[in-house]
Image 1 (tube, one colour):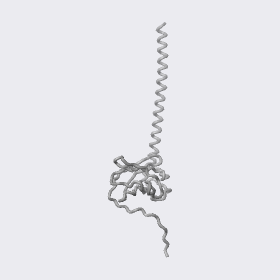
Image 2 (cartoon, rainbow, N blue to C red):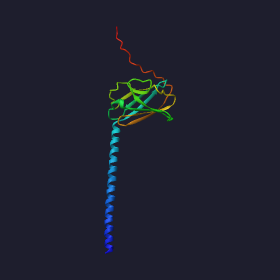
Image 3 (cartoon, rainbow, N blue to C red):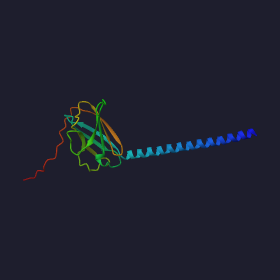
Length: 179
C-alpha cells in the first residue's frame, strides 16, 4: 500500500512539474516570437527609409560644411528639419549635435537645407545640406558625420578637413529689375 501511495504522489509530482515546465516553455517561445516580429518590423521600416552620405567638403576656414546625401530608401523623408546631424572628431575629444536652423547662426553649430526645407526628399533624390560651425570651426583633423532619419535609419561618413577651398554660400539679395 505504501508503494501505491508513493507511486501516486510521484505521478502527481511529475504531472505538476510537466505543467510548470510546459507553461514556462510556452511563455518563452511566445516571447521569442514577439521579439522576432518586432525586430522584423523595425528592419522593414528601416529598409523603407534610407540615407547615404555621398560627400562632405569643408571650406578653408573650417566654419562651413557642404554635405551631399542621397535618399536610398523607398520612402520619402519628411520633414527634413527632423534629421539629426552629429559631428565627432576622430580622437573622440570633441563632438556636437548640429541644430536645424534655416539661417546660419554665428554663435552655435547649425545646419540647413540648400533648397526650401518643405521640399520633399523623394527616393533617389540627392540633397545638399549646409552646416555652419560658428561656435566650433573645424581644425585640421579627421571627423565623422552621422545623419539619422526621423525613423532612426542612420549613416556615418568619415572625412578629413583639408585644403579644399569652397566659395562662401551666397545670401540672396534684392531682386534687380531691368531699366
